[in-house]
Each structure stands twice: as C-alpha cells, then as structure tokens.
Length: 255
Image (cartoon, rainbow, N blue to C red; front, side, top):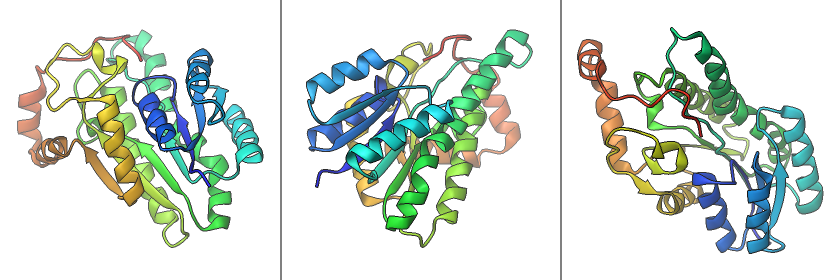
C-alpha cells in the first residue's frame, strides 16, 4: 500500500518540495494550503495521488473536516508533516505589529497543534504513525527583528518535545526538524548572508530521510546544527554584544 502523507503548507516552498518528494516515491498526499489553485496544479501533475484541501491551519474546524474526508477516502495517514509557517520582521514598539505577532504565533505554533490533533487518537489506536513538526534554528536564540518568529519556533520545539514524551511507548513517533536557511519565498527577502543555504528540493530529500529514520530531533543542514549549538552556548552578554546590530528581516515582509 502506498505511504499516506499529510503535508501542510504544500502549495509552495519547502512544503511543495516535501510533497513532490513523497509523490515521486509513489505516496498518496493529503495537501493543506491556503492557495488552493496551486494545490490543483500539483494534483494535475500527479493524478490520483493528491487530495487537495484549501484551508488555513489556524482554522481547527476546517482542518478537522479535511482530515475526516481524507481518512474516509484514503485511510489513516502514516506521516503527518506540520510545515505551514509564516515569517515577518516584527518590533514590539509598533502597534501595527501586534497583529503580526498573533498571526505568526497562531500559524507557527497552534497551526502544528491543529494539524496533528485530528490524527493522534487514530494513530494511537493503530500504534503506528509519525508526526513531524518543522521548527527552525531560529528557535535556538532570540533573533533581533524576528522576535515573533524566534519565539514561535522556540515554542514549537518545546511543544514537539512535550508531545514526543506524551506519546512515548504508544507506537506514534514525533520528529522535530529544525531547518537552517532554505531557498523559498520566505527567505528571498532576507537582506543578509545566509550560510549553508539549501535548495528546497535538497532540503526536502534530507528531511524525508530523517523522517524515515524517525530521528527525534535533527537540524538540516548539519552545519547549521553546529552554528545553533554554538549560539546556545554563548553567554548572554556576548550574544547581546554580537547580535545587537545584526541585520534584520524587513517588517511586514511575510510569506
């Protein structure tokens, strides 16, 4: 039986690359994204393999309905990848950024919860399945000008760890993936150097391998894992001095 995989944020960037990688392996894909017309393009390219659901992962009711429909048509998924995310430069002092904080936290944290929720009980009953959360190296330390994004990814890392422990021994695995820089529309606006940046299809292949191994926590590429570990080890006074004047993501430049 073909692998059944749910991918959120599947209409572009890393999500599209992940969906394509699985489709080329013969998988059946449940694709969530706000841009339904792009999902239909993917479906036309891989006829009979893609179930398309135009929705926002912040809408728990829409996600539940889509999950119910997919399960009725194709069965309980083997892998659920909560990939949908947004990134925007934010500064707390600006009142107009308050909504952006809410959007980033809702999508990047609660969007993972709402994507996983419809499937966990059924996976527990089957004693199998893999839940994959796409976090970020940006969650290792607070980055100036990206406070909402860094906070959301730090929260995602902690949430996924809690879930992994909760499901320990259930047969359901939780995989946390922290990408470094990936070539997507989200990173295209960054006005600074992005070391070890990967093409989305290359990153997707490496992520699929990590998912197959059910690696509980991985950083892709591995070099950014070393960078992230080094940043975590810096004392606060040194980190503050080094990053206080670091280049920042433009405000209001969202995915």
